[in-house]
Length: 503
Image 1 (cartoon, rainbow, N blue to C red):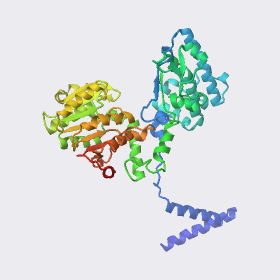
Image 2 (cartoon, helix red, strand yellow):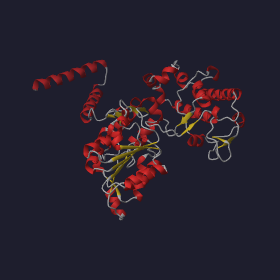
Image 3 (cartoon, rainbow, N blue to C red):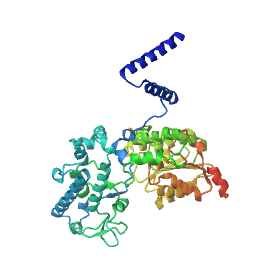
Image 4 (tube, rainbow, N blue to C red):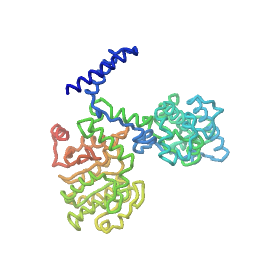
C-alpha cells in the first residue's frame, strides 16, 4: 500500500511538472480534478434515468395523445353543400389551396412561389424529400422522419394556422332550428358556394384561440396540402383534437409527471418515483395496444392480467348470481366471467353483457382466434344486450334480473368519459348487493386525459352515494382500475365518518 501511494504521488508530481513546462495552470487543473473526484463520490451513477417521451410514444401519440379522443368529427364539405356541383367544389378547393399555401409560406418563410399542392411542412422545413406514402403507412419511417419536428416551434404554429384555414371551409351538422349549416366563422364568399350557412355565435372570430377551443385542431400537420384538401372537402372528412395537445407529450410531462403541485402526480403511490414508473408502464401498455393481444379461451379480453385475477377472485369469493358488464367488445371478458361461474358453482349464475355492437371475432379491440359466442359456456351463462347501457329498455331488463338475484356484481367498462361514467355509476351501482362491488374500470385513463376521464365521475358519484366506499385492498399491486373497486356497505349517514373511510 505504501509503495502504491508513493507511486501515485510521484505520478501527480510528474503531471504538475509537465503542465508547468507547457504553461498550463497546474493548480487550477488539480482543483478541477479534485472537484470531479468529489462530485463523482457524491453523485450516484444511476440517480436519474432519462426518458424521451417522443421515442416512447412515437410521433402520433406524442402529438395527439395516447388515447383517441376526438373533439368533433366533420363530414366532408362536399356532402353538406346545398348545391354541391363539381364546379362549385373545384372553386372551393382552389380558394382553400391558396389559403393553405399562404399559411405555409408565412410559417416557414418559404416564398409561396416555391410551394405547391405536393408541399408539406416536413418537406419544406427540413429540405428533405419525404416519401408521403411511407409517411402514412410505415410507422418506423414516420417516427424518424418527424423526430426533428417535435421540438420545432414552427410545427405547432403551422398546426394552428392550417387548422384555422381548414375550419374556414368546414361545416357542422345542419341546425334543425334554422336549417342552416354552422361554421366556425362566417365568410360570405365561401358561404355562397356552400349554401345556407350560419356562424357559431359562441366563437369570437377575431380571436384564433376562441375558434380552435370550440372547433378543435386539424389532427395531422404532417400531411401534404393535397391530402388536406382531399380530407376536408371531398373524402372522408376529418376529426379535430383538443388545443391542449400542442404537443400532447409536452403537456403530459409538465402536467402529469413533473408538476410540483400537491396531488397532481400521485395517483397510486405516495412515493412519486414509484408513481412515475407505474405511470410510464401505463402509457407504454396503452400506446403499444397490449390490451389487444390478451386472450381467454381464444377470445380477446382487454382486462390486464393483474385485474383479471382480482376480479376472478371476487367472483370466487362472492359467488354472484348475476354479473353485469357494460362494454362487451369482442366478448372475451364475458366468457372469462362465465368460466369463473362454471368453476365456482357449475350451472349457476348469469352474466349480462351490454354493448352498442355485437361481439365479433375481429374489431377495434383486436382479433380473436376463436369466437367466444360459439363456446358452450356462452350459451349457458351469457346474455348479450345490444344497445347503449343507458337506454331505458336495457336498464329495465338489467334491473329486472338484478331484482331476482341475491348477489349482484357490476363491472362498468364502456364509455370512459367523465360524464358517462357518472351516469352509468348512478344507474348500475345501486343494483349491487351489500358486500359486493361496483367496479369502475380503466380509471388510469384520467392520467392520460386532459378532459377528466373516469376518476372525477367516480368522485361525484361517491359524494351522493354514501353507502359505497373505495376498497384499495382489492386493488392488485398494479391495477388499471385505481380507486375503481367500490364496495357497497350497509349504509352510513355520517358524512365525516364516511369521508374518512374513503381516504
